[in-house]
Length: 338
Image (cartoon, rainbow, N blue to C red; front, side, top):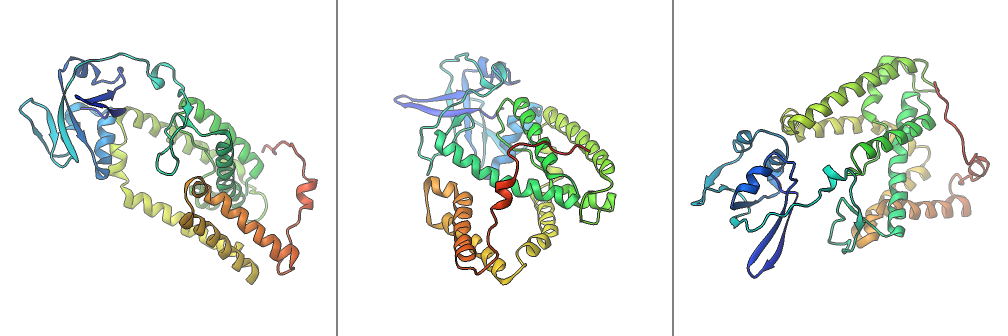
């Protein structure tokens, strides 16, 4: 009654599997005592079932999901599994688990082919590829991290400072198991604008009101997180199925669509350049492979930037790129605290 951390084939003569399980899991004592283990290989549509068996749901509740039947050995078999079979447990070895006993992930270098082998959670790419992907991620998060506070009348510099602190805390708390950047959320834009009466220009005069609401949302979010840690995610998936969460994301995107349209509608040249940028990124996604495809956003932006520079700065067809503000900007600075 568990989702294994990893299952891999060791040898074909005789057929042997290595099954990894955290020994602090609730099912470990039963696993250690049993002499027979049934393996059910799940398909993509079994994701919810896999999450259920990988969580802290009581064992009887787990087997209420799906249709099961029992083999002569007494092993439970899922009727619509991709493949199911029994294994004889020949040996149980006790090792050290990364998550529970050393907390932080023990990283190792990635040695696969990035074209067809995903990078595991505890693997890292060579320095050059890691830096390139980091720069691309910075570009990907920068627009939202700066645009969201501007639409709410906040200071973008302060927003980036706080999101950096939040990301470091998140990384430490999760032990490096979730490599994610915690940026600003577009979900707050409508609520902040309505609650503070922000006109959309300049600094928000009611930042204190918006901050108070944000803190309350953070507390509620933390409480929900603690509940999920204890009960699993199944109730959230039932409460908010993909059709609900997808609709929410779509509504947020549609509300922000006018901002995007306004940004690219300054002139005919700006509109065409926006289309060229989309075509550059799309072409890289379709016609390239390997690491270049993984860097499609970064490479596409660089290509579009070069095209814009040639057309605007060299040929004079659009507003030239001005580098004086970048040259005169300070290398270091402090955000304004309100």
